[in-house]
Image 1 (cartoon, rainbow, N blue to C red):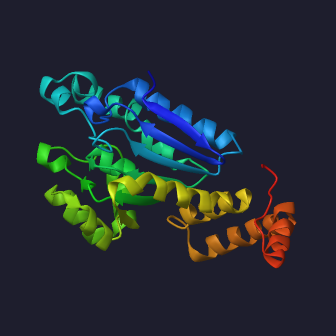
Image 2 (image 1 turned 180 degrees about the vertical axis):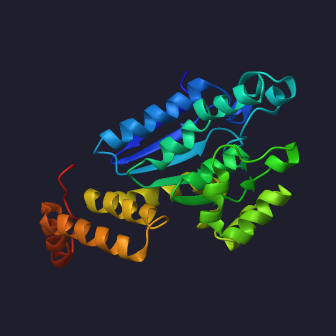
Image 3 (image 1 turned 30 degrees about the vertical axis):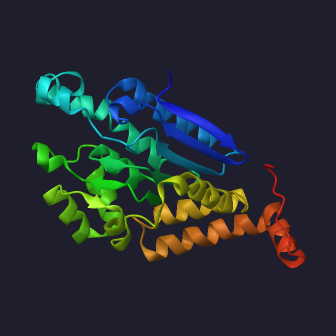
Length: 265
């Protein structure tokens, strides 16, 4: 059975991590490969315009398997050089894959997002939390560090000070606190989580798809670009957008007060 279960509704793809018995822990190479395949196929499928990622059961994602850490098995076996290679060939495939997505990704955090699960949520562009959600950058509690890119993603999500507070203490952050620090955009009742996330995704998907993808490239590029570099890239992207038939259709739809009908529909 696949770890990542897909359900497509129009131009929105809902992806559910489906191992509730393990609280959707990230444990083996097959899961890492599924993330790579998923992200590659989304990028190749122009009919997909937004993605919602959530977890089955009571947890969003429990992160790594602590029993494997105790038993020194799987990802945590071998000498330090073996373990470093295992991280590079293993769980670090997830941040590279998710960060490569060309379309907006929304994390619908239904419950605890712990360790690598917390980092997975921050890899998404937007996060919406259930009232039952909890976030914990808990690596230090186990005497380890964020090995999956959390030290890169978390400060970009909540700022350096809040990221340090989470990472240095490892303490849990409840949904309302996550909202106050900007870790999530919205907190909703548990039964409203998926409908809210899908509604937001649909709102994104109603826009011209090339413009959304290019906008995401700019937003991501701004993290590492100078203002001059970003302005140059913006000018080039804008020229492409003005030449697109979708731009003409969007302008016509604006004046005619209707939804646009874009090429990939």
